[in-house]
Amino acid sequence: MTPEHVNPESSISYLHTREWHLNVSVEGGRGVAALKVEENEYWSAADGRVRVLERRPDSPAADHSNTGKVEWAPGLPTDPAELREYLLKDAPSAQHNVPPTLVLIASAQRLHNQAVPAALAEAFFQVLTAQPDLADLGEVPDRAGRTGQAYGFEFSFGPKRRLTLIFDPATHALLATEELMLEPGRMRVEVPAVASYVLYLEQGWVPNMSDRPLVREV
Image (cartoon, rainbow, N blue to C red; front, side):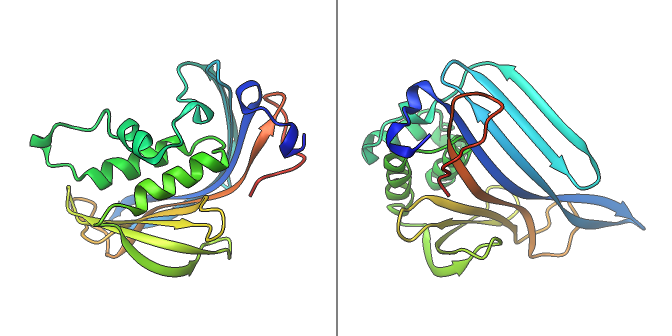
């Protein structure tokens, strides 16, 4: 399927990620932290069908399928003002003091479990980088060796952390995200420590839940 023939409304979304997540065990009364890597592939459809294929070095591959409600990325608003309103619609009430930027980032991460059309990727970029407390960190390489434009947000809602988003400088597609612990909280780990890191490696549109793109959008 070539890009000009793809109709996201009637196709299956495909996404390939590589993810690292912090695993903490207790040895001798102190936390021992290790980043565990996993390779994930996601298929999803507008009708709610979802398939996730998970691969970890120390366990057999896990293949999950279910049907439910899907926030279908091609159906989201691409006007930045409308998208911002959508991303904040379920934000906690003001009394909980959750920073709006944190809500926007979390919502964007949630919606990046499927292929994101170019116009929506641009809208995400415009919404997020318009936040005055999202700091421009300049160009950085991600863990796949791709150079991107990085933005960081530090927050103290719970133990202090920093979220970093890395965008493709040309297309503004999200390349990677990192969550860095700056305070240990209850986890008893040496900080700074990476809590999670996600590479968005490949995305595209396919006709079936078992297919991978022939022409891939990276």
